[in-house]
Image 1 (cartoon, rainbow, N blue to C red):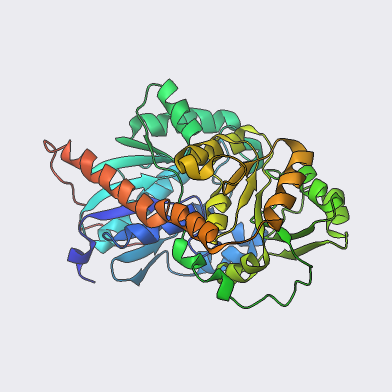
Image 2 (cartoon, helix red, strand yellow):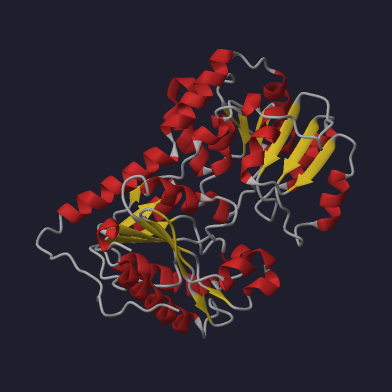
Length: 413
């Protein structure tokens, strides 16, 4: 392969697999790929990962470095079992750094930047990159229990990773505030949405596994301990049609969830591929963001809010900093009860607002306003903001020479 196509490479160390449900890492990588070459790096996984997550089997079995298209490649670091355990995280880091060094050596181009969303694995300098970026995506320490990680280990190592980075990008206003209190100067670039994926929602085929009468309130996304089940129970108890689209974590309140989905006005259709989501959004009249008030949720950015708006649907959400930030950006469009995002206070109000918005006429003007707002927060715009921040930081380092990986280190397992 020609090394010139990999010049000014951006390496993105993701927290989710490339071939899983498209999340923020996937979208940012694809949009950055329109601006220059990208190497997408899966989170380190062990050979035993497929025993717990069968969908990961193909990633472990295939070649570690794969070129997916012109200027776009994927790397899967395969390490020892228990990569994030306190006694093994150091070994995982060293193995992963070796993978990064060898992969960028094989590609052969100059590495402009490494964007890492990994709080546990410091990779600065592994690719001899021009600058190192820490992508502070969430309040990882606040969500340690949900992630199954050690809060103490996450706190210690994330502080080191962020402090060593040349640039910190925060995906949430509360996370940005946290790092400012710690003496850093983060750039706030929240998550975005894939507006093109939802442009033709109303022309999508009607799903065959839904038979609820309208209007319909709906949740599209993972159902787990981040979800406040009391909010959904209130909507169901109010007699509203409720559809749940997405996987459910097995340990998430199984008895309550079973009771909820047994109601005649509730349908859980399970996980669906990304390309099928427009069909389900077609039958939803109001999108729900039923997050509980927790440290992790306060330090996260609810992608589904923007996805609902991109589909032209209004939103009822709980009161989180990222939602308030979006309301501030809405300005007059978000003022009063006619705004496209409504913040509800408690289960009873959540049900009232969902009923009100679901029953409201879906006018062409309202749909256009919601989609226009979502387009301002597209992943394309987010990628340009990240790219501009990197270029700006690079220009501030003009006294430094550009580094190249060692051309003799080109073998990768």
